[in-house]
Image 1: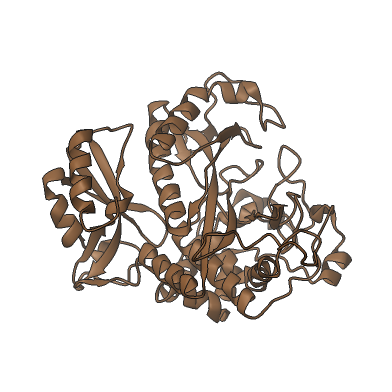
Image 2 (image 1 turned 90 degrees about the horizontal axis):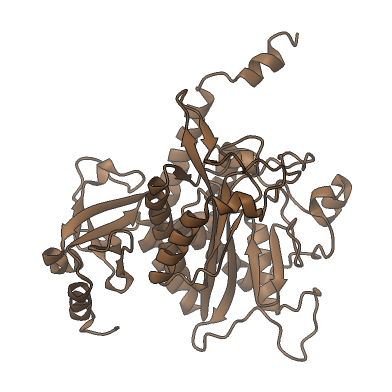
Length: 460
């Protein structure tokens, strides 16, 4: 539907689909969705001028109450009819102020980075795997897993039929709805923690992958309510259970031909033993170089660091494993790696939290990888056939494997020092650092935990 007449074609499509209302949607710095509901007859207005928002009411957009309005202009190519609310359509939008794209908009910023990557001759294709919990609130204000039949109790519940069976209707709803919206969902399963589930998407370009994850989160929140539960993307809602990630599968392609550039060409030496081209190796080299700053963006909340607290104590969940990397490594088809290579066609980033703002993470990911390509960064030897969780400290040190930041403050301080990663965020970087330091400070002023009382009350 590309071309001058696309707006008119979308208007006709909405008429055919029986659309009465439009949600004009964007995300704030946290990745939280913000919307206005607009009658369908106002479609031309939100395409050409945009729906108005007061920037001072939105986190991280660089505005106060005195600034001119944020105008969210819809991207007409992102039209989706909501299967669970079929008279409503949603459009992703890009923020503008006084007719100019607003650099604090996460989607506008990612479009900028993608365009810069394309000028270097590259495309970034990817797909997120969103893990999430279904929970219920208790009368005391705490949460429990959603387990209406009382059967999701195994110590190792991953792939369990009984555990998944009670959620089968929920999973079928979100798969059906997601595929009606073109998500190419091809698998779902009960994940490693009780009450935890994962969905696998098809691949797409960088911006659409972020749009897709954002809409998926919107959808799951609505469908979960139908079954009397809350869908949460909190990284670690239960201290004794595996945390939730948003694993990112990715490759770099040629901007003109679309050819995947990660597999090595015939006749080239397999210099790292993974079947990868030098470009693929150098891209990962850039990621590893900048990983400690990237972690601030990929794990953006205080709670996220409970998920990556593996350290030397790796068996810290009820199932016996965290499934989360704490060290910067790469290697073969091995889930103890940070960057896992299931095949020469792609890598998987296993560090990313379910609480991520995907637009920000994808932007810094591309920038770090491009830095690796341009500067031919060598990531060192891959970990092939090695359990990184159990690797002795001395071996990690010999390989130059750095531990990921263990607190939000530590990660943000790494971000402050990394000019490549900050540049990928544009002016969002300073706003992100300011807000995340404030979040850490607020956390440290919070109520003293029972653990601290037990540990330190009579220590001396």
